Amino acid sequence: FFLCFVCARFRALSVSDGESCDTLLRKWHRKMSPSRGSSGPPVVGFIDMDCFYVAVERARDKRLHGKPCAVVQYPTGQRGRPDLRPEDDRWRTAGAMGGIIAVSYEARAKGVTRQMSGHEAKKVCPEIILVQVPTAFGKADLQIYKEAGDAVVELLAQKCDATEKRSVDEVAIDISSESQRLLSTVDFAELRCRAQRASHLADSALSKAAANVTRSEARQGHQKQQARNVSELADGWEEVFQRFATDLTVQRLIAGAVVVNDLRAEVESMLGFTCSGGVATNKILAKLGCGLHKPNQQTLLLPHAAPVLLKDLPLDRLPGLGGDFGQAVKHRFEVETAGQLLQVSRLDVMKHFPQRGEWLLALVAGEDSAAEAVKDRQLVKSLSNGKTFFGEKRLRSVAEVDYWLGELAGELHRRYQKQVEKHQRTPTTLGVSLSMEKESNAKEHLTRQQSINLGSSGSVEHILTAAKALVRRAGHLSDVVVLGLCLSNMVSLEASGSLTKYFGKAAENAGGSIEKFAKSRVKPKAQDQDQENLLKASFARAAKREAEPIGRMDQEVDEGVLAELPLNIQEEIRKQMGQMGKEPRAKKLCAEIVEIDA
Image 1 (cartoon, rainbow, N blue to C red):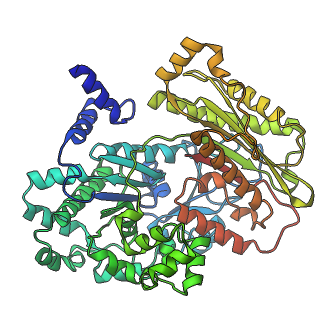
Image 2: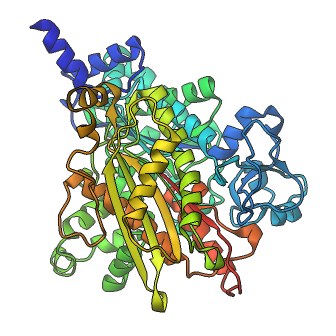
Image 3: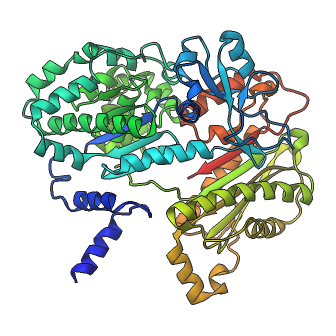
């Protein structure tokens, strides 16, 4: 009975396959610890890697350290170019080159920004070193950046109750148990000193100045995001010690600041990457604090500081309010900041936004109920990629569609093999999504799925054959402007083997070919519906962008690269590209590649 109980508890930990026994035991201890959750709200950290693409390149090439450098896209619209492997010479000094996607702080000091092309950066900073992203299968190859991001997540997970990978360079972490452990084993006076030496307070003068900037300034790295010395971190700490000396929540958060600082130091020591951090009682506030002071700094946001920080914070700095909904809220109530919205009566907010009013008010008040708990998500749920074809590059024959299905299948196969090798997981569903342009610029979107049994040794041909079959069932193809593939519904190899053993071929064809059109009358299961919606939304957005003007060739956007950047950077670059490309070109090039790990 005891062994059954232990096995059940271990399964409940949802750990990644291949973790060390030491890591399993630490998670077991945290899971069984009665202290977690018994002392108030959770302690949440947020980690944002500093200039991550550049950092990854510097870890691979020591010559880049301390020098102004940037990572650039590959030149799109040049089919047939040989692959550029990570180990190849990828420095670019002349010729065709893409736009900049990551800039070192040394280059930023010289005036280089992410909105520039490589050639423009050279004019502003002649000594800058430009490193092109690797390429494979006719698209950007982001594997080295993904693997580096995974290494960070795995390292953080060793001391966290939950580790939620938010993007390739952002992670939310629940550190409640580790914070409580420190409080129980280390003298609080020592924790106070360590936290003060490492952390800004969110309601300090420096933090309030950093918060009171526009969304655009926050994205670009405003002038208040600079390296600070220890003396500048003292602002406000003495008041905290006097007012909240016996507040257990504050004590746990102070311990959490020590935990985050230790984790950041370990990431730098073990992997060579610096990162910035935030600590609060929920991941929205922790992320907000994390963005106040960069690079290689951290911010502690205590409960009493949330109203102070949010008072003059522009509404579009908060998650969910940077788009159309945020604009609707500002227009309806004629407000610009979170503090101003809090002055609007609750009745008015609920009257105009009955579905989201409660969440909106909790968000601008900094309440924990506005944020979901940190989810222990270290592994991807699906592997997706796609390509958009502009203008004369649209696909008009089955042969052209088959060629690009082969490229996409080859890239997905490599990523699937990584899942098998590293996590002993395999996908069980293949999805195909395509968009065709009809008369009057109308778009027809089709999405189909079927079961697929790749096991541990599935081949590119296996994926490609199934993908071709799904496409054939779509009927006549013409003017394809978006084409995408997705491998989803990951299961352990053990579970996959059990299906094959007991059901044989029937497992692969269970329920027949599960064909899902955009306007299907049959409502799929929730999980399948979520995946289908993800595919349709991603490719519909890409198809919509097909009609938008694009700037010069050396400034075209590689969506394969953008898909891995934080959402705010993606939006910033797309906005700038749209401004640069107001004049339409007679011919549009194949310029967008989408790659998604969901």
